[in-house]
Length: 136
Image 1 (cartoon, rainbow, N blue to C red):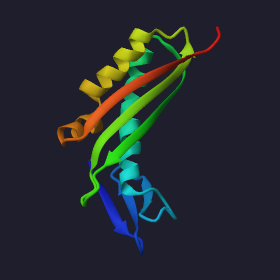
Image 2 (cartoon, one colour):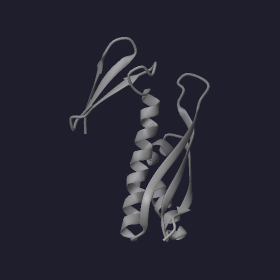
Image 3 (tube, rainbow, N blue to C red):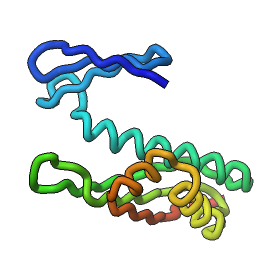
Image 4 (cartoon, rainbow, N blue to C red):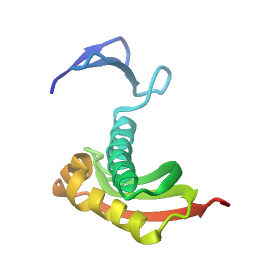
């Protein structure tokens, strides 16, 4: 894996991933997210990929999956994340709570490399879920 980050003036930077995608980052939020916001989005994406793959394998009829992420940062520089909570809101038909619980747990404990890396770095990670059942 690789990436290149190029200064674009002021507090803006253009990140280019090794796979060729560009993302603008901006401390002042004029042209893109802040770097720490992008890290949270990466965490949510990584975990969501896992959760959805596990739920599909267990043949759950999922129509939507949203992860709401709340994070706390240190008050001093460097303002690292100290705690992050991921709440998965899974919508579908005839969803089995045990499957949703297990998918979230497996992502947190075994599969999501972003989450595991943050946790090993001292961030207190927590996870929860909510199921929204649609009418059949």
